[in-house]
Image (cartoon, rainbow, N blue to C red; front, side):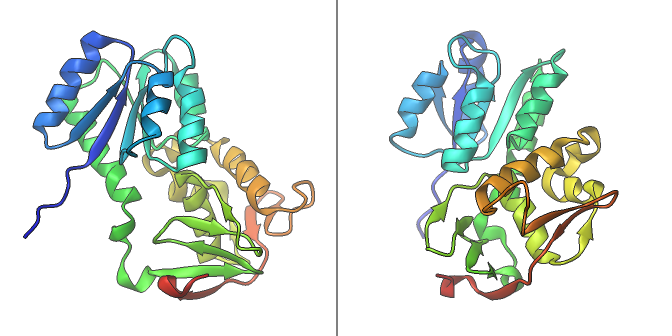
Amino acid sequence: MTEPAPTTLLLVDDEQSLREPLAEYLTRQGFRVQEAASAAAARSMLLGEMPDLVLLDIMMPGEDGLSLTRHLVEAHGLPVILLTAKGEPMDRIVGLEIGADDYVAKPFEPRELVARIRSVLRRSDRTAVPADEQQAYHFEGWTLDPLKRRLTDPDGTLIPISTAEFRLLRAFCDHPRQVLDRDRLLDMVQGREAQLFDRAVDNQVSRLRRKVEADTRNPHFIQTVRGGGYRFGCDVTRTAAQDAR
């Protein structure tokens, strides 16, 4: 039998003294590691092979890690773990709000980082969707395919969507016309970080509305319920994902 290809990580950090030993350690853990010393170098590498996950330092000269994170999640839908300075909580909050999947504060224990990597990969693994959930969602001409992580509009145009936006939209599609409060939505989308960032869900809803609403000031799909949270205001049907168009 052919062995599966190793998981590819893109490690982006301008500190060579941290980047190279960490790359060696991750390689010993069975990962294939690509290295980039800047956001510009990382962008160039993305023109070739796509990694499975990006490890990204926030504080870098030139384009910073937060700007690159936005590009990674919005243009490519890649899982991102931020490597942050211990005393910069706002950077972590902003990073999670724009779609990063997790963060690890420096200095960190490499074994903890490996555990975080594997956890994020499990959450983002498209093949890990249970058989009874391998169905596409349809709402008023839109289609959300959970296997391919693809959102298409009524004209069939592919709409770029980040991992966090996908999880949020899927939560709404799983509970159409139900009021979902912020705590529940945060838990669905951010997991263990939910309780820390109360405003994160509002920012994610705003970004998702820009993707699906004709008028974000008068949303049709994602409706605000005063004092209650949000409600997905339309019916949702499901079909086998491979039959989705």
